[in-house]
Structure formats: C-alpha cells, structure tokens
Length: 128
Image 1: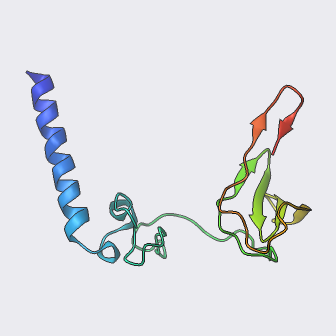
Image 2: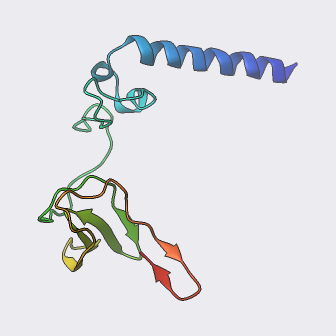
C-alpha cells in the first residue's frame, strides 16, 4: 500500500511542478524553478539571469581575467587549473589566482568551438 501512496504523491508533485513551470514566465520564477524549462529564459539563451538575491546563493567574484577571445563553451577544472577555449586558443588558468598559465592555438578560426575541453586519464598520462 505504501508504494501506491508514494507513486500518487510523486505524480502529484511532478504534475504541480510541470504546471507551475509551464504557465508562469521564467523571469517570475526563482532559478531553481526555472531550470526545468527548455530555454530557461524567454530569449532561449539557456542562462539563468539572477543576481542571487532571489535564490540566496552565496556566490561572490573571486577574480577576473581577460581571456582575449570569445567563450562559447563551459570550462573544465582539473587539478587546480581551469581549461577553457577562448577564441582560437585553449587556455590554462590558475584556479586560485585566475592567472593565465598557458595558451595554445587550438583552432585557426576566430570563432571558438562550442565544445568544452575534455579531460581523460590515459595509459600514457592525463590528457586535455
């Protein structure tokens, strides 16, 4: 009997979440409620624009760095470094200070790749 009750409650929660996220504009919902929507915002940018005052998340800016190129993908963090493609270059930044440690040309075109860098442990060594 408990399994049936659990299924009913779960279905009701899912139905209520669907109704709330589909009938209300994304900008009227807090970030956690807007996330299940396909585009998250009305411009289909897939970005949550929130000053964190609504959600109360304790984020703050630790540092900034001019990457000298446009970024269209997510960075990855590996062993205390951030790897990100900016323009035609793949950059390695220090996670703590935000300093550029290394830069290699990964693409001959000025537009960056939409793919994020990938990290893998191989038999030879870890690779980006």
